[in-house]
Length: 391
Image (cartoon, rainbow, N blue to C red; front, top):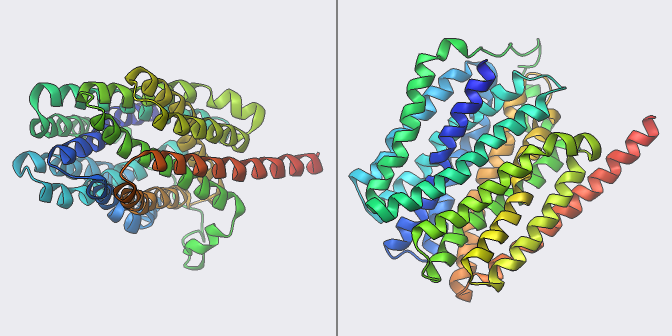
């Protein structure tokens, strides 16, 4: 079944997509980078995708998604290997935006295929499966990176990460004829007025999905950036840091198993509101302990919260997009995600450099999670009110 192939390949590819960001952070810290420098690296990671994600989504709507899959994996593999050939901080600054752009091509194509190959009845379940693959990569990737660094050192670990998308590229090329091309857009969907992005932003459902996703990505970025830095400051080994990061991915896997039954009963927005509350509490715990087991438990709790935020905002964005523009709706969500990559890390990196600690950053993120909960509680009440009026 093509959908199972796409989800399986995505699960494997996310091992590198999740692990490479931990590797980039730990290698930069090893080279002497501080919070501001590592924040800039994360910002560069999201720069090109932020500028080009919507254009990639429009290409996916109009042309063959398989091309984006091949282009993305091939170029991502090459870029991942560059730090091995030219090991330096300057190389990281060069390849970070290329990492983000090339991985974005793969993500746009696969997320759109999952949505278009599903029906309204099973789309939530299929996106949940897709997200389970992502959380699997979030478990394996950081742990693999930690073990690789402790065994081989930082530079050879980039080749380990590059081998994963290279293997997936071979499978995509061999199985490309089994991946169907989505049906073309309905007549009139490609006219110029309908392609105005502002039309999508006028929809309250789309705005809610994008704001929620912005809050989720802020939390994810700050966790991915500052947990390795915090663990390094506590003299944890790379393997210990990888296990803490992996605890987040394990929890994300668990929580995504329960997305379909919970959303059927309470709805996507109500589940998001509860997830943000759990995330806020987890962020409050991080600066209060220096114990690796307790940090792993807090990371697990954060994974329960933020782990369902990404698939739920993905579902909301896909459902809010009109017919023939699903990839554009998905890419708008991705543009917000990568925009958060651009703005959040250097902003909070500067805060961390001025304050000299991560506690204030974790507290600030807890407040942002609270704001995300408030937005979705209000939307959930409005949706419930509309349902009662329609009955």
